[in-house]
Length: 344
Image (tube, rainbow, N blue to C red):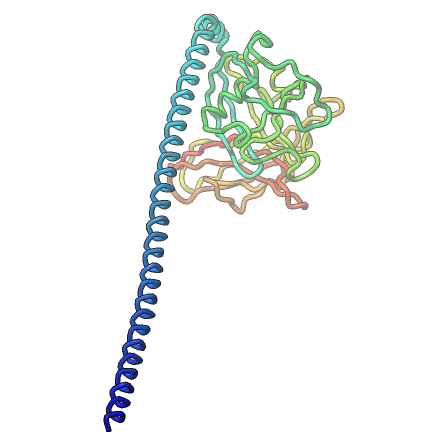
């Protein structure tokens, strides 16, 4: 009986030891897991702090670079301003002396003329008074596009004794807002200056003979525009001719400039052109031309003598002009200087 009790006590002790050992092992493993998890969390925190610190450092570097760039740009602007001021000062110093003499020269050589510029489809500039002297044409001209161009020595003030048609036209176009290369194209051929375009009408636009020409007092000069000096009172016509020298330049006249309502008047349209080979001048009636009143066409067409009869049903002021379109659907005459008729 005593042996049996001892056995039970021994078994109970062994069981308690086993249970205690089992619980101790569970506690140890749990501590290790917690410790490991804690280390992971700490490592993650450390990594997070490192990334934030890097971002802050990168931002500081970027801000520093931006500040340095702004300083560089500011310094460049200041240097650019100084250079421009220096250039302006140098330019002023260079031009002070000659400007007085050039002004005297220009003033003594000033000429006053009247210019009209007729494009293919419309009048670009009506008859306008222009006063000009000699000035440097180089800033207003550009390279030639034709094969006959030669090396140029320039068209400065020293090349002229008197202002020319080139000076008068450039002055007029500039005053009217036409800009080089966009509004007009004055080309330097070396041996001459040539107008290749005005107002979008460029040579060869309609035919191989299309281009710009000019007449002075209704005479076609045999030289380029820079080779013909102008005189006070000159009447100059610049026109785009679709048929070149065969384009008929017209003049209009009326039997009366002041009439009553219903009173007929006779409009006469004559033309003039030149033979390119002999330079001989030909005059002829401009037949088949439609008469225009205040920009609108009438049913009146000139006969074989270049005449048409018209009358007005209302009082007012009427500007007469004319246009002609040939069988090729091209305008082959230059519009005349308008004539004003007063109807009472």
